[in-house]
Image (cartoon, rainbow, N blue to C red; front, side):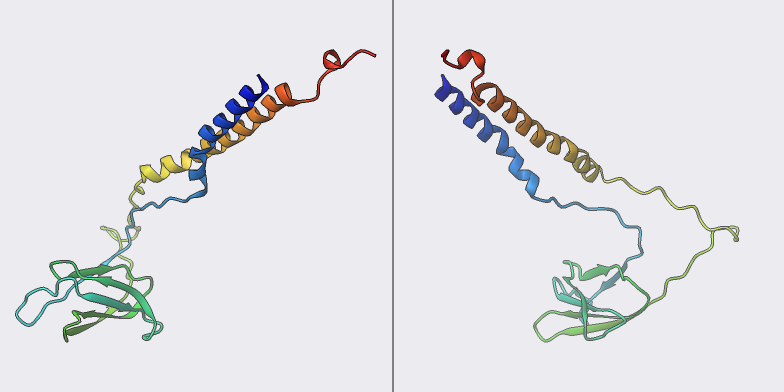
Length: 171
């Protein structure tokens, strides 16, 4: 009976703890940004797109320090969201001897609301449901782990603890 119980407990531990391994991993998510992005289209002289060309973005503080790397899409477009105002340099290289360089001055300007005076009301932020649900399940996962260990402790106490007065031999 005791061997059977130990085997059942071991199987139960394996079945319950296998999904818990995912607790140690982290997920990825996305969020909507309403910051202004800047798009550029890189083309050849005949107006054909520089498809999938390598793009490098250099920020305003250090022209030698690379800020972002990417590729144009199939129509030659590339977009980025600058982190600060200043003179940004964006290059597009097709690795066949064609290099285009764009110097873009970014200056954030506050736009007054229609009618002047008062600032425009901000739009309500969009909610990322996947992110919200993922955060809501964290307490459930933690509770599952705690309950597994509490149940194991109770099982060992009930079936594997010291024998009580009834189990001792009389002298």
